[in-house]
Image 1 (cartoon, rainbow, N blue to C red):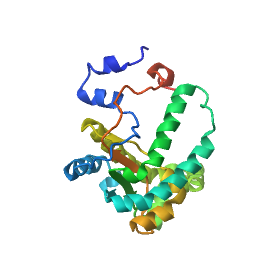
Image 2 (cartoon, one colour; image 1 turned 60 degrees about the vertical axis):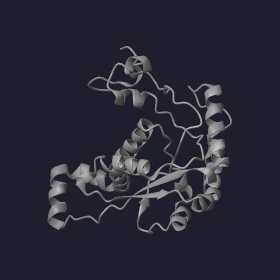
Image 3 (tube, rainbow, N blue to C red; image 1 turned 90 degrees about the vertical axis):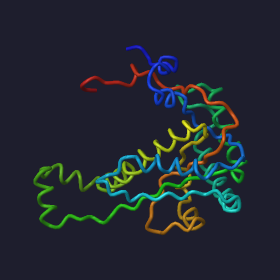
Image 4 (tube, rainbow, N blue to C red; image 1 turned 120 degrees about the vertical axis):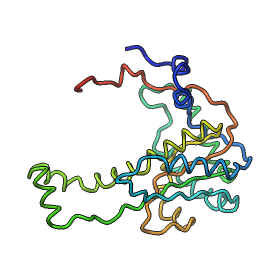
Length: 240
């Protein structure tokens, strides 16, 4: 199977070119992002699929420079903790020079975070279970005893993935929309290391979960083709 290159992708619908050039852009201009563009990004996120069509997502959009300055020390601590775990050298299969550029970009964003024009925090609150005893019995009967026992043992992971599946498709829509509008953005989850402090700083309710911190702004660099594994290396036809 031949790899799909950025040049081949440009012959496809415009969305394919957008995806093929959607790098994580961490060097941002301090120029403010117009409110109408941010509304477009959230609209794109809302168009994403939602489990059971419950649409229980909320989006905190930060543009106030004073609030961003208050968040900057939290971001610095989270980035410091992240970089401490990544090692000084590139992981297996990654070019050392590319790894160095990535770390340099992360450090640049850390040092200039207070100048970030906009930050989006996607949130989600999963509803309480609605199954009664009869429903639980029917579910167990459908799965069978062994699968039911296994499901009980992995319920925490299942719940986390269920919430994530209601949020991250919308986040990807937001990132695609940002690229299409010429904005730079990247998804991070480092804030989860200090989630309670982030929620306190932003007034997010205790029972609301946060799923990402997405800095957004005009790019200081240029968009370009992403570097990913070839399709032939990742596809398993019909079975592993």
